[in-house]
Length: 287
Length: 205
Length: 121
Image (cartoon, rainbow over all chains, first blue to last red; front, top):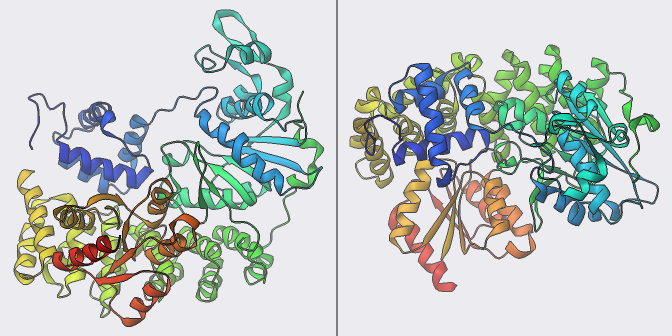
């Protein structure tokens, strides 16, 4: 292999490109050149752990391993699982600037706007949605909004209902918002106001289980960010289909910034807004 | 506080209708695509549904419903389902064919017994899809099916498709087959390009 | 001229890229019709070279989407495919392709069509 340093710390350019293509195919995440070092390091680490001394044999192993275990380990190593308030804020901007105006233009006065956030994880996302709406949506007082959030992990749901967060988790929030909605606790932690905790419906759900997902219907906006990348192709498709059924025609769904429906399913329409590309369930007549 | 109300006040959303297999089969053929969609999705949980799903797939025109039927067949993955999916490979409808390829490539153990026949099918399009499926699968045998196609298939596009996949891997065992393909398709620039790339990868390995 | 190559095989995209770059064209790639459509929404391409059989969204559906999208409906499309029969060519033209080339593509053929299109542009 060309371009290898003595101690095997660098993948060749060709290997990196092949790997990048493969990883994109599997997860929808595309690494650009700037992530090169990060990717190299993680792959080398996994190669050490699994005992492969060259990239080619490791690559073949992950490609042809029926269990998909090592691929999953690699995905976990390469994806950043951190959650925090106002993560990928540009989507919330698109929500108030583009999605909500479209959605409300089709609603009659008195009808509700329903938003679904899955996975809720420890609550940062659903609370972020609520905060963003309260602070930045000019029509917040004109419409009733329900926010429902779900996760398969009951510990995470419990934590979400407690509403206690580290200073790291809230660091993206503008100070006025932090002061208005959070109470500082000891050791740099913050507790979100009970009003918000009580405003969000938290439920347990397995996104791949079509029967469980029946409980969730008529959503106008869905946030499903950085979850589907962890699934195999079939499960990912099922999850997308379950979300589709959970939405109103014309409803929008947002994935994580590096994710794309282009590896999952074509049942949604891609829509481009100034701040984000999101996906839309076709309006009535097209199901 | 803004108008964010709790779910409890609006119960209808929470009610899950009673589901019965018979009702779902009925809904699967309903006029309303919304009903067919939901039925197709939920029937993936019932092993006995495969024959009904395959039957519906033959007549279904709505894309989202078709996708759900295919996903459900792939979940059930019994013999009837697999055969139903394989039959889709012969369809005139590109969308249907491609969805079936995707689904089948996720079911390596179930498709295993059929692959040998598929890669020797009379229809060269089916052989192309077989090569696609082998290329997408996580199955150790897939490599040998691909080698067999590259070594022997007389159709340039069938060979080309299998060659694409082998070129990805760059394994020593495929070298002989690739050289034979290069010889067999001396006048095809694409085969020469793909074969040369594959050989380079093997040698660099 | 900006060209988008749409094909699920990385190798085929490489091959077409080589041909087009030799003709002085600037090339980008997409691995299926939906990815291509997302790219088309973000950038103006002067030409699309589209395979038919791809996962998620096939070539015919992608071209139809282009034709249905206000700012993209005039985009030139060359359909490239292993499909051999006349009914497949008919389908290609019906969904809006401008040209159809059978795979495997010969370099002169692809370049020839591209030059015609860039001449028209």
